[in-house]
Length: 115
Image (cartoon, rainbow, N blue to C red):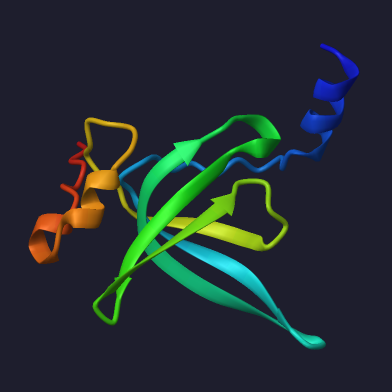
């Protein structure tokens, strides 16, 4: 392991988030407004994960007021307070970009059934 990898790994968060593409998640994001800091919730479906290590990011999509909203979050961002998995999704692919063209019930992801 070279020095660059050691520096990158030292910046990574210790608590890894356990979610996958297709999951419905709540992300609690720290918002700074002037001197005040608050936590805002963003709920949506994970449509993509990319990268590895410190540079890993994930894209979350939700429909708000009839418009699709997507946000890209770095996994190791200090702005992310915590992530809660609401529902596990049962998908067969790693990128769900096709959901952008779907509307209503067609845009739903099947729930993963566990025993």
